[in-house]
Image 1 (tube, rainbow, N blue to C red):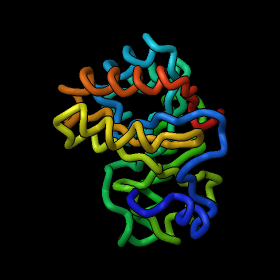
Image 2: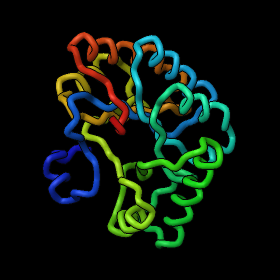
Image 3: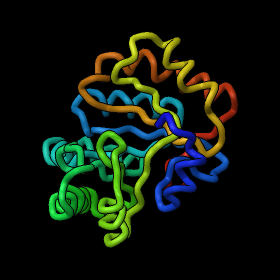
Image 4: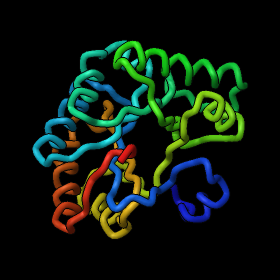
Amino acid sequence: MRCDARILQLLFPSVLFTTTAAGIHLTFDDGPHPTATPAVLNILRERNIQATFFFLGQNVQQYPDIARQVATEGHDIGNHSYSHTNLLFKDEAFIQKEIIQTEEILESNLGKRTRYFRPPYGYFNLTILNVLKEIGSTCVLWNIDSKDYRSKRQSDMERRVVPHTSNGSIFLFHDNKDTAQKLHTYLPFILDILLGKNFIFKPLQS
C-alpha cells in the first residue's frame, strides 16, 4: 500500500492497515505451499515468532496437512479467498462464494472459523466489506509491503521494510511458488534485523 495507512484507516475504519498493539505483525499470503510454507515455519520456529497466514481455499484442499501444521504450531489463520481472483469487479454472489467456501474449507480442516480476510491483491470495495460484515469477519491489509515475490536483492527489501517499521505495523510477505526458492535468504535476514531492534512479533489476534 503506497497511500499513507493513517489516511486509509480514516477512510475505511473497518479495515485493518495497522493495529494499536505494542508489537509488529508478520503475515504471509497465498499458502499453504508444499515447500514455501514448511520453510517459513522452520524459520519462525527457530526464532520463536508467531505470524498470521492468509490461506487460499484451493490450496488448503490440496495441502490440508500443511495447513493443520501451521495451526498446530500456534500461528493465526486468515481467509485469502478460494482462487485468488481479483474480486473488485465481481458481483456479490461470486464474492460470497469465494469467501464463504474458503471459510467452510478452513473450518472443516482446522476445526474453527477464521476472523480475518485479506482480499487478493489488496483490492476491496464496499460490496466485499458488506459481505465480511455479514459473516463477522475483518478485512486486513498492510502498511508495509516487502514485495518479496519480485525482489532480487536483500538490500532492496531491507530498505523497503526496516526503516518504516513501528509498533502496530502489518507486514506483507508470501509463502508461494514465487518465494519458495529464495525466502530462506531474505526472511531470516529481515527478521534478525527487526529482532535486533527489540521489536516483538505478534499474530493479529494478540
